[in-house]
Length: 215
Ligand code: C5P
Image (cartoon, rainbow, N blue to C red; front, side, top):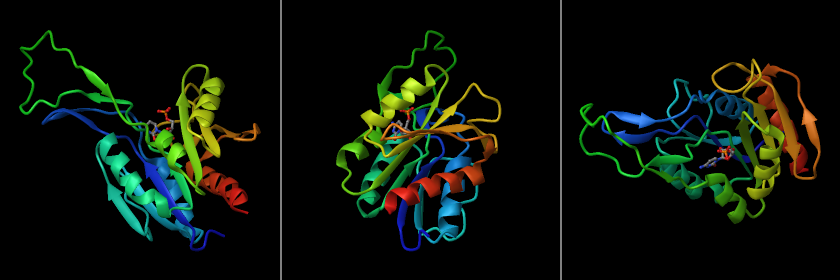
C-alpha cells in the first residue's frame, strides 16, 4: 500500500562530543525507527533512513542510509532530504543540548572543578513543522511526567499530524526493549490507546495511521 511513497525516517540517539574520547547521549537503541523503516520497505515505500549511532543493521531494501553522530549533523541531513518526502517520521531521540565547546585534547581528571557548559541544539521537528508543505509529519514523545500534556504541546508546537507517546515509567515501554506501550494523539484531538505490542507490530500500526492520512 506504500508503493513508491517516499518516507524519511530518523532513528537512534545523537552523540554530542565533549572531547576526543567522550560524549553525551541517551538510551535510545534505534529499534523503533529501524522497525518502521523495515516495515515501510516491505509495504513498498522508498525509505531514507537517517540514523544516529546504534548497534543495529540497517534493513535491506532502503533507498538511502545516512549515518550521523550529532544533532547538528542530523539537522543538516534531514533538511537536505525532506522536500522530496511524502512522509517524515522522527523517531530519533535527538539530544536537546550539546557541549558549548569541544575540547581538542582529552580533559584531565585533575580538572575536578570541571563544569560543562551546554548550548541548545536545533529542534529538527519543529523546523520541519514550519517548513513543511504537503508532507505528513509524525513525531514521538517520551516523557516521565505530565505525559499527556507534554505530548499535546509538542503536537501543536511542532505542527504534527500525529504524535506517538510513550510513557517511560511503564514496564515494557520506551528505550532499548523490543515492546512498547503507546497512545497516539492526532491533530484533530482524537487519542488512541494501543495495547502493549512488539515494536515491529507497532511500526505497522503507525504506518496504517499514516496511510489513512494519505487517502
Ligand atoms: O525532545 P522532544 O521530546 O521534544 O522530542 C519530540 C520529538 O521531536 C521527537 O519526534 C524527536 O525526534 C523530535 N526532536 C527533534 N529535534 C530535537 C529534539 C526532538 O527533531 N532537537
